[in-house]
Image 1 (cartoon, rainbow, N blue to C red):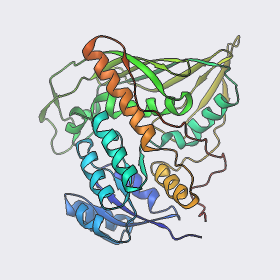
Image 2 (cartoon, helix red, strand yellow):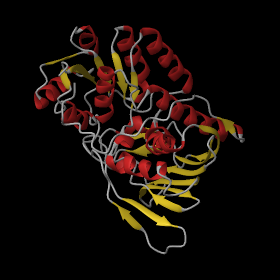
Image 3 (cartoon, rainbow, N blue to C red):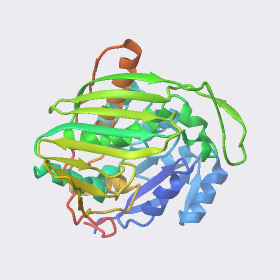
Length: 366
């Protein structure tokens, strides 16, 4: 077996619990460092998950054993932290979105290419058993030729439950940039690159209120549109209708369907790694439930796939190019809403290879 890949987690906020639980359990990885602007928070997470070192991001990047940086900072810091890690010769995994805008994403991809390091990005939910099972059904022709997709994410916004929701409403947030990547990545991983997009957007309120935690009752400004209705056309032929909204009192999330010439496929919630997969053939009045096959370990599976790809010399699946294309798609949606016309989507990528159904994160490789 090859030595485990040395990992530093930079950004020890809420999402770090899910990552650290898995990253510290995968035998191919060794988490060496927890870093955060708040070093007390970094120490708390390091102690909770048995990570030997904690401190600042600068100290983590200087550690000779750190080979890959898992960047879990807020979106506004994604480019800065990732670029610093690349400059230090580290591979990088970014939380989504890759960066705040397509321009900085392209720059980051170029920097990684020049430095000869890998760049990966969340979401890695499409590697889970649910979406991988759906992918295998599409690839095997069970729905025929894919024709269209429908995705819905609606709710009142995260401020009711998140103790510090302000960043959700800053540039790089909102329902499009915060939740859109789950849906757009799931579709891109099955249908390939998008070619153009059209959209309208709305913003219900300019000010929102923290609903829980120590800051409950505190008002904060909204800087992004909070309702997005979009049409996305894919180069392979299908068209998708998408709604992402933080303006709805009705909670409706995880809805994503693919319709083909032979059947409709109901996908699981793309923000999960498992979930239910259902198939409804043409002419049938009933759905058939398909039992998912694959791994459901959760966030960090994409980091593990990067580590195994480094060892094997094969492409990793949750690539920077895929994330950049999703970023380009979201940028085209924003531009279309501003300009009132269809907008082309840039950023090509290779459709990631499906995972074998028996791919096991808990079994060491090498």
